[in-house]
Length: 311
Image (spheres, rainbow, N blue to C red):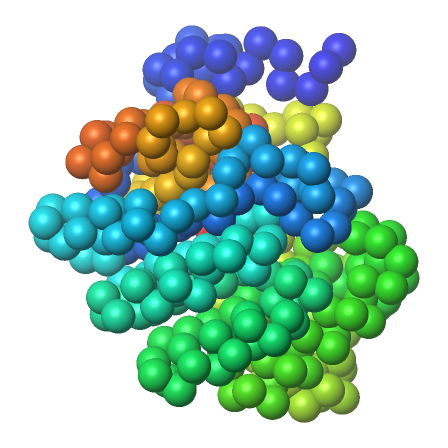
Protein backbone atom coordinates (compact mmCIF):
# COMPACT_ATOMS: atom_id res chain seq x y z
CA UNK A 1 0.00 0.00 0.00
CA UNK A 2 1.44 3.44 -0.91
CA UNK A 3 2.49 5.65 1.99
CA UNK A 4 -0.14 8.13 3.21
CA UNK A 5 -2.89 6.52 1.11
CA UNK A 6 -6.15 8.34 1.70
CA UNK A 7 -4.45 11.12 3.65
CA UNK A 8 -3.84 14.78 2.81
CA UNK A 9 -6.82 15.06 0.49
CA UNK A 10 -9.42 17.33 2.09
CA UNK A 11 -7.88 20.61 3.27
CA UNK A 12 -10.40 20.82 6.12
CA UNK A 13 -10.76 17.24 7.35
CA UNK A 14 -8.22 14.45 7.87
CA UNK A 15 -8.66 10.87 6.68
CA UNK A 16 -9.91 10.01 10.20
CA UNK A 17 -12.60 12.70 10.04
CA UNK A 18 -10.89 15.11 12.43
CA UNK A 19 -10.46 18.83 11.88
CA UNK A 20 -7.19 19.48 10.08
CA UNK A 21 -4.85 22.00 11.65
CA UNK A 22 -4.23 25.28 9.84
CA UNK A 23 -1.81 28.12 10.39
CA UNK A 24 -2.71 31.80 10.25
CA UNK A 25 -0.26 34.38 8.96
CA UNK A 26 0.67 36.29 12.10
CA UNK A 27 2.81 38.79 10.23
CA UNK A 28 4.96 38.54 7.12
CA UNK A 29 8.46 38.46 8.59
CA UNK A 30 10.24 36.50 5.82
CA UNK A 31 9.56 36.86 2.11
CA UNK A 32 11.09 34.07 0.04
CA UNK A 33 11.88 34.44 -3.64
CA UNK A 34 12.40 31.38 -5.81
CA UNK A 35 14.88 32.72 -8.32
CA UNK A 36 14.13 29.87 -10.75
CA UNK A 37 14.44 26.08 -10.74
CA UNK A 38 17.47 25.91 -13.04
CA UNK A 39 20.54 24.59 -11.24
CA UNK A 40 24.10 23.79 -12.29
CA UNK A 41 23.82 20.28 -10.79
CA UNK A 42 21.13 17.64 -10.37
CA UNK A 43 20.94 16.12 -6.90
CA UNK A 44 19.80 12.57 -6.29
CA UNK A 45 16.93 13.72 -4.06
CA UNK A 46 16.12 17.39 -4.65
CA UNK A 47 12.81 18.40 -3.07
CA UNK A 48 12.12 20.81 -5.94
CA UNK A 49 13.70 18.68 -8.71
CA UNK A 50 16.12 21.44 -9.73
CA UNK A 51 18.48 20.60 -12.57
CA UNK A 52 20.21 22.16 -15.60
CA UNK A 53 17.05 21.45 -17.59
CA UNK A 54 14.20 22.24 -15.17
CA UNK A 55 12.75 25.68 -15.87
CA UNK A 56 9.24 25.07 -14.52
CA UNK A 57 9.88 28.14 -12.38
CA UNK A 58 11.52 30.75 -14.58
CA UNK A 59 14.00 33.41 -13.48
CA UNK A 60 12.38 35.88 -11.10
CA UNK A 61 12.83 39.52 -12.10
CA UNK A 62 14.06 42.43 -10.02
CA UNK A 63 11.19 44.58 -11.27
CA UNK A 64 8.68 42.08 -9.85
CA UNK A 65 10.48 41.93 -6.52
CA UNK A 66 10.41 45.72 -6.31
CA UNK A 67 6.62 45.56 -6.72
CA UNK A 68 6.21 43.04 -3.89
CA UNK A 69 8.54 44.93 -1.57
CA UNK A 70 6.44 48.03 -2.17
CA UNK A 71 3.26 46.06 -1.43
CA UNK A 72 4.77 44.74 1.80
CA UNK A 73 5.49 48.33 2.86
CA UNK A 74 1.98 49.44 1.98
CA UNK A 75 0.48 46.59 4.00
CA UNK A 76 2.63 47.43 7.00
CA UNK A 77 4.14 43.94 6.99
CA UNK A 78 6.80 43.49 9.69
CA UNK A 79 9.18 42.23 7.01
CA UNK A 80 12.60 41.48 8.44
CA UNK A 81 14.22 39.16 5.93
CA UNK A 82 14.16 38.40 2.20
CA UNK A 83 15.40 34.93 1.36
CA UNK A 84 16.47 33.72 -2.09
CA UNK A 85 16.28 30.06 -3.01
CA UNK A 86 16.18 28.04 -6.22
CA UNK A 87 17.39 26.14 -8.14
CA UNK A 88 20.71 27.86 -7.77
CA UNK A 89 20.10 31.58 -7.16
CA UNK A 90 23.41 32.65 -8.68
CA UNK A 91 22.28 31.34 -12.07
CA UNK A 92 19.70 34.14 -12.12
CA UNK A 93 21.41 37.13 -13.78
CA UNK A 94 19.46 39.57 -11.57
CA UNK A 95 20.27 38.01 -8.19
CA UNK A 96 22.70 40.75 -7.12
CA UNK A 97 20.24 43.47 -8.15
CA UNK A 98 17.42 41.73 -6.24
CA UNK A 99 19.57 41.35 -3.13
CA UNK A 100 20.48 45.04 -3.32
CA UNK A 101 16.81 45.99 -3.60
CA UNK A 102 15.98 44.03 -0.45
CA UNK A 103 18.98 45.31 1.50
CA UNK A 104 18.29 48.87 0.39
CA UNK A 105 14.75 48.53 1.73
CA UNK A 106 16.20 47.76 5.15
CA UNK A 107 15.77 43.98 5.21
CA UNK A 108 18.27 41.25 5.99
CA UNK A 109 19.07 39.02 3.01
CA UNK A 110 19.61 35.27 3.07
CA UNK A 111 20.77 33.52 -0.11
CA UNK A 112 20.74 29.72 -0.33
CA UNK A 113 23.51 28.48 -2.62
CA UNK A 114 25.71 25.50 -3.36
CA UNK A 115 28.68 27.95 -3.55
CA UNK A 116 29.83 26.36 -6.80
CA UNK A 117 30.66 27.80 -10.22
CA UNK A 118 27.64 30.10 -10.64
CA UNK A 119 28.47 31.95 -7.42
CA UNK A 120 32.18 31.97 -8.19
CA UNK A 121 31.88 33.80 -11.51
CA UNK A 122 33.80 37.11 -11.32
CA UNK A 123 30.66 39.24 -11.74
CA UNK A 124 28.87 37.46 -8.91
CA UNK A 125 31.86 37.65 -6.57
CA UNK A 126 32.26 41.35 -7.31
CA UNK A 127 28.57 41.90 -6.68
CA UNK A 128 28.66 40.05 -3.37
CA UNK A 129 31.73 41.96 -2.25
CA UNK A 130 29.98 45.24 -3.07
CA UNK A 131 26.87 44.21 -1.13
CA UNK A 132 28.99 43.26 1.86
CA UNK A 133 30.77 46.61 1.73
CA UNK A 134 27.56 48.61 1.39
CA UNK A 135 25.42 46.60 3.85
CA UNK A 136 27.80 45.04 6.39
CA UNK A 137 26.23 42.45 8.64
CA UNK A 138 22.95 42.23 6.71
CA UNK A 139 23.91 39.62 4.09
CA UNK A 140 24.11 35.89 4.85
CA UNK A 141 24.88 33.03 2.48
CA UNK A 142 23.60 29.60 3.51
CA UNK A 143 25.66 26.89 1.86
CA UNK A 144 24.21 23.51 0.92
CA UNK A 145 26.82 21.12 2.29
CA UNK A 146 24.87 17.94 2.82
CA UNK A 147 27.49 16.35 5.07
CA UNK A 148 31.02 17.10 6.27
CA UNK A 149 32.29 13.89 4.68
CA UNK A 150 32.91 14.20 0.96
CA UNK A 151 31.67 10.71 0.12
CA UNK A 152 28.26 11.37 1.68
CA UNK A 153 27.84 14.79 0.06
CA UNK A 154 29.08 13.58 -3.34
CA UNK A 155 26.72 10.60 -3.31
CA UNK A 156 23.85 13.11 -3.26
CA UNK A 157 25.24 15.89 -5.47
CA UNK A 158 27.78 14.25 -7.75
CA UNK A 159 31.48 13.32 -7.70
CA UNK A 160 33.77 16.18 -6.73
CA UNK A 161 31.01 18.57 -5.66
CA UNK A 162 32.14 18.60 -2.02
CA UNK A 163 35.58 19.91 -2.98
CA UNK A 164 34.14 22.57 -5.29
CA UNK A 165 31.70 23.77 -2.62
CA UNK A 166 34.54 24.05 -0.10
CA UNK A 167 36.39 26.29 -2.57
CA UNK A 168 33.38 28.61 -2.62
CA UNK A 169 33.09 28.54 1.15
CA UNK A 170 36.73 29.56 1.51
CA UNK A 171 36.08 32.55 -0.74
CA UNK A 172 33.07 33.55 1.38
CA UNK A 173 35.19 33.22 4.53
CA UNK A 174 37.90 35.45 3.07
CA UNK A 175 35.32 37.98 1.85
CA UNK A 176 34.03 38.36 5.40
CA UNK A 177 30.44 37.48 4.47
CA UNK A 178 28.29 35.78 7.11
CA UNK A 179 28.10 32.08 6.24
CA UNK A 180 25.64 29.48 7.46
CA UNK A 181 25.45 25.84 6.40
CA UNK A 182 22.55 23.53 5.57
CA UNK A 183 23.15 19.80 5.95
CA UNK A 184 20.78 16.88 5.65
CA UNK A 185 20.03 13.70 7.57
CA UNK A 186 21.54 11.38 4.98
CA UNK A 187 23.15 8.88 7.37
CA UNK A 188 22.11 6.90 10.42
CA UNK A 189 24.32 8.94 12.73
CA UNK A 190 22.77 11.08 15.46
CA UNK A 191 22.38 14.81 15.05
CA UNK A 192 25.02 15.30 17.75
CA UNK A 193 27.47 13.19 15.73
CA UNK A 194 26.71 15.14 12.57
CA UNK A 195 27.25 18.45 14.35
CA UNK A 196 30.52 17.18 15.80
CA UNK A 197 31.70 16.32 12.29
CA UNK A 198 30.72 19.78 11.07
CA UNK A 199 32.58 21.30 14.03
CA UNK A 200 35.75 19.50 13.05
CA UNK A 201 35.44 20.67 9.45
CA UNK A 202 34.71 24.29 10.41
CA UNK A 203 37.68 24.37 12.77
CA UNK A 204 40.01 22.90 10.16
CA UNK A 205 38.85 25.43 7.55
CA UNK A 206 38.65 28.45 9.82
CA UNK A 207 34.93 28.93 9.20
CA UNK A 208 33.19 31.12 11.79
CA UNK A 209 29.91 29.18 11.48
CA UNK A 210 28.68 27.80 14.81
CA UNK A 211 28.06 24.04 14.38
CA UNK A 212 25.84 23.88 17.46
CA UNK A 213 23.56 26.81 16.59
CA UNK A 214 20.54 25.40 14.70
CA UNK A 215 20.14 28.71 12.85
CA UNK A 216 23.75 28.71 11.63
CA UNK A 217 24.08 24.97 10.98
CA UNK A 218 20.72 23.64 9.91
CA UNK A 219 20.24 19.86 9.71
CA UNK A 220 17.19 19.22 7.55
CA UNK A 221 15.26 15.94 7.53
CA UNK A 222 14.97 14.16 4.22
CA UNK A 223 11.79 14.89 2.27
CA UNK A 224 10.86 11.27 1.60
CA UNK A 225 7.25 10.94 0.41
CA UNK A 226 7.46 7.14 0.67
CA UNK A 227 7.48 7.41 4.48
CA UNK A 228 4.16 7.29 6.32
CA UNK A 229 3.53 10.41 8.41
CA UNK A 230 0.54 11.42 10.55
CA UNK A 231 -1.86 14.17 9.62
CA UNK A 232 -1.83 17.18 11.93
CA UNK A 233 -5.17 17.92 13.59
CA UNK A 234 -6.18 20.83 15.78
CA UNK A 235 -5.79 18.52 18.79
CA UNK A 236 -2.14 17.90 17.93
CA UNK A 237 -1.03 21.33 19.13
CA UNK A 238 -1.82 20.45 22.73
CA UNK A 239 -0.64 16.85 22.43
CA UNK A 240 2.71 17.88 20.94
CA UNK A 241 3.12 20.96 23.10
CA UNK A 242 3.48 23.13 20.01
CA UNK A 243 1.78 26.18 18.58
CA UNK A 244 0.84 27.31 15.06
CA UNK A 245 3.25 30.18 15.70
CA UNK A 246 6.10 27.63 15.58
CA UNK A 247 5.35 26.71 11.95
CA UNK A 248 7.15 28.43 9.09
CA UNK A 249 4.05 29.60 7.23
CA UNK A 250 2.93 31.66 10.24
CA UNK A 251 5.49 34.25 9.23
CA UNK A 252 6.56 33.64 5.63
CA UNK A 253 5.44 33.40 2.03
CA UNK A 254 7.27 32.60 -1.23
CA UNK A 255 7.21 34.30 -4.62
CA UNK A 256 7.53 32.24 -7.80
CA UNK A 257 7.03 32.80 -11.51
CA UNK A 258 5.74 29.69 -13.24
CA UNK A 259 6.78 29.04 -16.82
CA UNK A 260 4.10 30.43 -19.14
CA UNK A 261 2.31 32.39 -16.41
CA UNK A 262 1.50 36.03 -17.05
CA UNK A 263 2.61 37.12 -13.60
CA UNK A 264 4.25 35.76 -10.43
CA UNK A 265 2.31 33.97 -7.71
CA UNK A 266 2.55 33.85 -3.93
CA UNK A 267 2.88 30.43 -2.31
CA UNK A 268 2.47 29.30 1.27
CA UNK A 269 5.73 27.40 1.48
CA UNK A 270 9.21 27.06 0.02
CA UNK A 271 8.88 23.26 -0.04
CA UNK A 272 5.72 23.02 -2.14
CA UNK A 273 6.45 24.99 -5.28
CA UNK A 274 4.42 22.77 -7.61
CA UNK A 275 1.38 21.99 -5.45
CA UNK A 276 -1.45 24.23 -6.67
CA UNK A 277 -3.23 23.76 -3.36
CA UNK A 278 -0.59 25.95 -1.74
CA UNK A 279 -0.81 28.79 -4.26
CA UNK A 280 -2.51 31.69 -2.50
CA UNK A 281 -2.89 34.33 -5.20
CA UNK A 282 -0.94 36.97 -7.04
CA UNK A 283 -0.53 39.52 -4.25
CA UNK A 284 0.68 39.48 -0.68
CA UNK A 285 -2.73 40.70 0.44
CA UNK A 286 -4.43 37.72 -1.22
CA UNK A 287 -1.87 35.40 0.33
CA UNK A 288 -2.54 36.50 3.90
CA UNK A 289 -5.20 33.85 4.53
CA UNK A 290 -4.55 30.77 6.74
CA UNK A 291 -2.77 27.71 5.34
CA UNK A 292 -4.19 24.21 5.87
CA UNK A 293 -1.48 21.69 6.79
CA UNK A 294 -2.53 19.38 3.99
CA UNK A 295 0.78 17.85 2.88
CA UNK A 296 3.19 15.27 4.36
CA UNK A 297 5.96 17.90 4.43
CA UNK A 298 3.80 20.02 6.76
CA UNK A 299 3.85 17.21 9.28
CA UNK A 300 7.35 15.77 8.91
CA UNK A 301 9.35 18.92 8.22
CA UNK A 302 7.55 21.77 9.96
CA UNK A 303 5.50 20.40 12.85
CA UNK A 304 7.19 17.15 13.89
CA UNK A 305 10.65 18.09 12.63
CA UNK A 306 10.49 21.63 13.95
CA UNK A 307 12.54 22.88 11.02
CA UNK A 308 12.39 26.22 9.27
CA UNK A 309 14.03 27.55 6.13
CA UNK A 310 14.37 31.03 7.62
CA UNK A 311 17.37 32.28 9.53
